[in-house]
Amino acid sequence: MLDETVHFLEGRAVNPEDDSYFDLPSCSAEVGSLYEHCRRAIRHGLRYGDHGLPLMGSGDWNDGMNLVGLRGKGESVWLGFFMCEVFRQFAQVAQLHDDPPFAEFCVEEGARLHQSIEQHAWDGEWYRRAYFDDGTPLGSASNDECQIDSISQSWSVLSGASNKEHSLSAMNALEQRLVHRADALIQLLDPPFDKSKMDPGYIRGYVPGVRENGGQYTHAAVWAAMAFAELGDSKRAWALITMINPVNHAQSAAGIDTYKVEPYVISADLYASPPHVGRGGWSWYTGSAGWTYRLIVESLLGLRREGENLHFNPCLPAEWSSVKIHYQYHQARYLISISQIPGDGEGASVMLDGVIHKGKSIPLVGIQSEHLVEVVFC
Image (cartoon, rainbow, N blue to C red; front, side, top):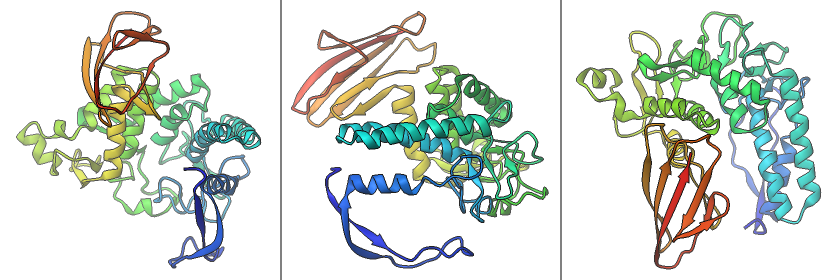
């Protein structure tokens, strides 16, 4: 697939005084392999500010923070973690694609960016969110509003790019500051934007505690649960998915009256502002639903497919002794039994049709057949 030829698009550059424009790009006569498109995209993103962090422009994941780096100097801490993950994964792709120089380039860029994050993004107990164009930090204990933002903490774990001690501290801060078990919601940031002189953008147009402005943004809440699972913290990971699960918001008449949206689909957000605490908004949200599916299947049940191999890394509640999964791969059916036994968390064994396999994975075959898989971990 990486060798498939694809046309580029052509369009004018965005003017310095604009944050965007609407137009119809044309198809360029220039073509390149999909692999070359990836290489160019990565190199195009190598734009850093004074702290060695990626430029934020008019928004990163959170497009509501569209004024943080509008003048071309603001930097995104979250995007730094995200790019570290891109470098890590694409280094492997480049190596497999017989391009060792670019693989080495990705490794070196990732290491340099990691160093900048640790030097300039650590706030003392958690990671900052960004820097404004004038160098003012965002997501810092020194701020009046938005002292902590969840996605920098979650991605310090998910990217594997931070100091482990810092990540543990950051995730503890996330739980203490942003997880509200009594109300079953997980804030994106706190305190909400309201009256301070900081103007991050149109996120301030939302009422404090609503949507991205200090409410639960489910997309980010799922990342937090995935991060706890990545740390092997099944207790907190399952506590968060229990809170995210829409069914649990509608188990009583009072709960239904509070939640007010469908309990069988994912909502984009939950309000954290009285008198509407716990109210859902923008339901049928497919982006968050997709991440929730990955959280359950990959992070918690521990199934992850790579090519024609199925990997196992379960993160089950302590009180679960076992779980059974029926997994379909083309015409083959895999009857998977995962058992959890007391231990130090280091041991694991995988057996396919009575034969023990080294590591934590099995090969998949697509022909019509049925297979028994036994996974034991502690």
